[in-house]
Amino acid sequence: MDSIDKYANHSAAALAMELRFIAWVKWPEPGSDLFWKEFLEHYPHQQVNLMKAREIVLKVRPVRDSMDEKKASETW
Image (cartoon, rainbow, N blue to C red):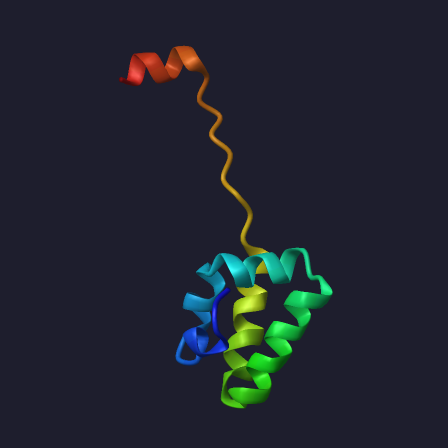
């Protein structure tokens, strides 16, 4: 398991790309809530980055590939 120290100097963008952070934002559970609470207790200066990263994660939507198999073959 990752240490909270790993994220100490992450920017909002870097936090928003971390799978552990994304999972917490999208599917919070007691263990992940505790982890990020402890993170903020140790690194209170990261509060702004954490909130910005949360906004980023919530706004990002996966891109769906609409190319069918025939079109993919033609492209190749």
